[in-house]
Image (cartoon, rainbow, N blue to C red; front, side, top):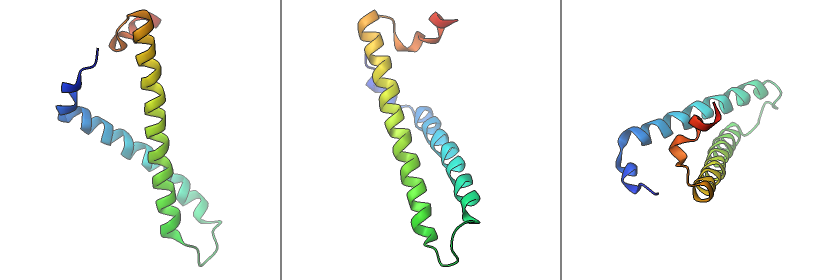
Amino acid sequence: MLQWSLLNNANIWKDAATQMFFTLSLGFGALIAFSSYMPLHNQVMRDAYTVVFINCGTSVFAGIVVFSILGYREHVTGIPATEVGYYFR
């Protein structure tokens, strides 16, 4: 059952933003590691934006995939998606 009222909860949005910034920090770590191999006159801003957009796009895509699978599982089995972890322990 969809609970659209949860989108009004600020803690959910805070947790999502925290997750995005965490994965973005991993992406910037890769950018810093590769910076020693870049030419002297490279487009650093373009590379930084590329890392940011790829990271955010990957996170959105993964969220769509994971929650689609959870929704389908809930639809087929009738087990709520909030109780997924309880059945695999």
